[in-house]
Length: 372
Image: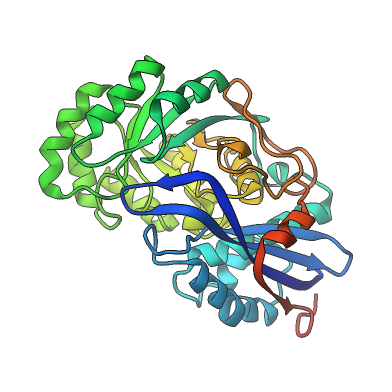
């Protein structure tokens, strides 16, 4: 791949309004942007989607920064990387840290596609030119006013963050505006086994699905709940590898998966999960992590794969940002987002704005020991 060096920068982007879940509050999105350069001047972009605080996963922007600088990039420097598919096995000696791994792997996929002069969608085998977009509404959002706005945009699915015991009230409030539009809620793992009866009583709400009601390592009670409800059960935090996906399928723990590139470690694992889902005829959808336009581009491309038939968390850039760090922000029209058609991830980064928002950065030389 003719790799030269990698720039890792921490960018602080203030959200248009705070994003509140049952587990945490995000006011300013601290994210890591990865720039992978080759000797011919091409650059591939990735994004580490870990949060500043460990409320979603143990990874944070701080742990990812340290892992990239002291472990992940040194391993890549000493290895021969001819194709981004090799990154997964190259980094297999490093346990965990999927989000940090995914950030460099996705950057190298973007770089590779640009070197080939092809859209990344085509290299990965994407089949959709447009993907259906859903929108996420946090606990701090004004449901009445914001739902009306998103309804006009034609969003195909609405995901609500909820508090335990107030699910019905929240959903009924949204239904007053949305009518019979698909609505789901995200449990973020806040429910305990003793909440099983409470959850089954929500079956009459005719939800699109319930996402991750129980803790991430609990396949058993997700399986039990799925047997008791007609409402579909989705796993999010539980799926961190292809083995997790296979195990969940074999145990009957879910009807669908929310696949996030960062959480599973990048495209290589996401493609393996996609393969399992295709064999099992399981629908998938792509989740979001309050990404900038760089991470959103990768998500939209992932959602172009065949088995991603459910609307993903692919809302337009202005949902979160006054100004995104890409020059052509993503738009939602009639509930659809266009998959980029230019080489790589198909977006142009606004380096002037990104420099302004950069808190810290470092450059890692990959050319010293690589013979590529």
